[in-house]
Length: 324
Image (cartoon, rainbow, N blue to C red; front, side, top):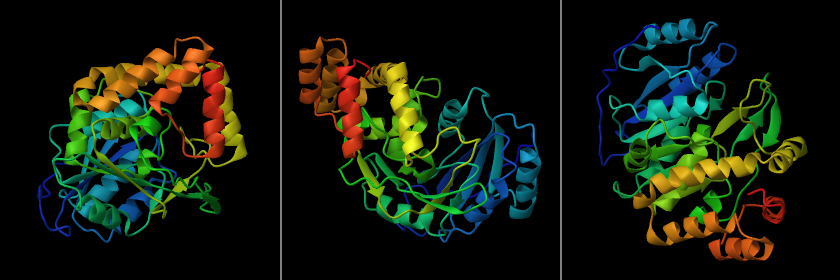
């Protein structure tokens, strides 16, 4: 793998949103089919102060050659390619985010197969600039869904309830491919470490930021095209087929296993959580092992909720069946 030096100047703590530097963090693995379209959409961003750092997890197709071609065209100040840990997409994103040689005002996670709207980084940065730098802040949002050939398929679910730790414990409201966050949010990820075992990097940052008393903004207007195809590791939860798959996961105990991982990870970061969220986490953990009546009562006390009626019905079912 060719390593390209990243020399782009940083404007950390800039008060001018136009000058704020964004580190775009992309993870790749055998992404030759759609990678060029995504790279083109990053290149066309109206916010110009960005650098792209790609962590490739051992691609065996033409992905390295495509990245090298763009590096040759863009120059060394735009693109750096590093080797990923080779243990899956979650570890790849977390290890890339925790790299000490990356410095920026804001950080944007980027998948290899989507297409960004031209104003994606600009809109996210304008919102992030309104939040004091010491407060963890996370921008995320809805997506427009497209097929593998670029045909419009619809939109991801529209969520209207406020982001909150009591929601984050039982639901991830947005994909990591929509997320842009500030240095204070990144510091939480770095402190937790790249080796921490969690189901998903996007769910993890939602829990961390809300748990620490940070701010999350869910943008109802899509700023990217989210490609749905057979190689997607995690697809949008927008179709009935996808919802049935997730219901099956509940019965199989997958949701229960994921919550075990999240609870252990959050307990390791308990010192960063606000007092009321530490109490909610404790209530959530204890209720999971109780008898039916105490389990229901405990979850009510924790104030858990999902973003939709169907989602809450699924949550109730998981509670009743002790699959949460």
